[in-house]
Image (cartoon, rainbow, N blue to C red; front, side, top):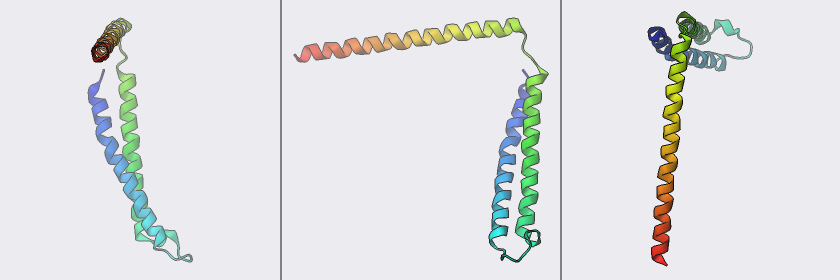
Length: 118
């Protein structure tokens, strides 16, 4: 698995999101400051917001491209994937068994306390 592309995609994701949200906020400021007869494109706030929104969209698109290229670049071999799943299943089933064992012990301890109070 190519972890560096995944890390790079996750690095660019918040920057793209922040730029897009700030761009939308600037566009909103630009629209609210205009009178009904003015052109939207004459507002500096709106123009700056559109520019920042475009930059944010490009960063988000770049993050998506990096993420998807990581998934296609290194497919895992079927044998290794199957053994990892088997290990995961054994680990999970052991965790579930441990949970129920602990639960039974707690129920028994509570039952003993109830019997002592009588």
